[in-house]
Image (tube, rainbow, N blue to C red; front, side, top):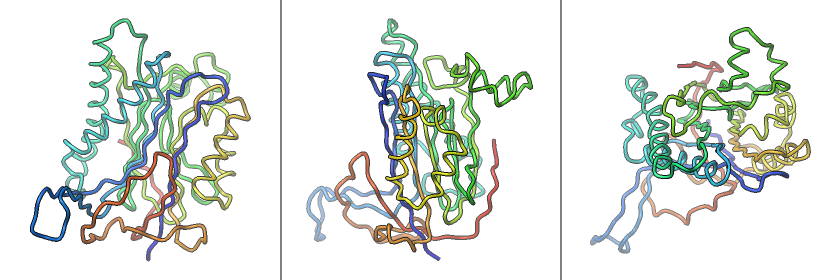
Length: 324
């Protein structure tokens, strides 16, 4: 049985901030071959791409003010991508025997980004404190691996409910976890936005958490910064995602809701919708995730904010979250 994925990401500065310190990424991980010269019928410098091996979705929310926050979130996402491409061991050979090492590699990708931020901060000691949240979903259908630090979030929308896959790393949430404060009091707690974990120049603040989730058809995977969740409740998010819209329309309307409710922060959302392919909104398929394809010349790169749809082969899935 085949399905499709409709993805879109959008970031907005909001009504108050002068600078957008959020970043996001939607990417395919593929094998590639760059041909410099050959007797075959290819032009020089032809880039051949294999089928998609995995999908990567990321959001990052920088902190520090001035240009420090956006620099930190930029370096974080660039650092993770650099690690995935150059260092990660199990990029194309993920299986049960290697899963533990794979999960360690995901955490190491965050540590690599943290080190880049730390090195940059050491070169500019007069800069204010700089850091960033990072939330990433690494999808090898039907498995989603979620790794995050900070209070940006990941959700799966299924059967009318928004299932949170991440745990906020804030002092307010720590008080709730310790039984000192009720969950309902977080929204009015004065220190609710103080982070207990992030990627920054202080390596002790990096405490990445990993969760696993098995996706199934008609799931919607949402990553977002707290610019959305501080103004739009999980119930409202679920109600919105239950409507029949494209990924792009969902993203635009969610950011519109956050801005209408206050818009005092930057807001970033990334949405991936895994469908059965029956909706007339879906674009024709152009690649499969799990079946190898003959290599072909790479098309023109997509712009930063795009709508895409790609095929996936579906196997049985179950809705359990495993945290490590």
